[in-house]
Image (cartoon, rainbow, N blue to C red; front, side, top):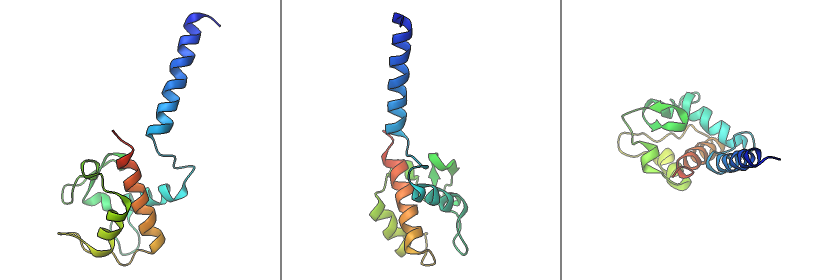
Length: 115
């Protein structure tokens, strides 16, 4: 392998390793995909989180609630706020425990994995 091809291969491998570290794997964890779906589209009697919150991964720019990319909440805080409400955000008790867990996992994963 020529020196240039070796360098290109090394750079490509480093880029792939960084992408694997920096980006959550939605294919490997279906709960992440479910959380993203709930965040963007809501469910039954629960509106989409994206209406009120900014979250880069979801492509949302809501201005009513806090910017989640800046706040970087952990999963337990997210679950607590979903269940109890906070400020202008009401409690969303219609979500199942599995939906709350998926949504909490999604938001905490995509906000914590970014520098």
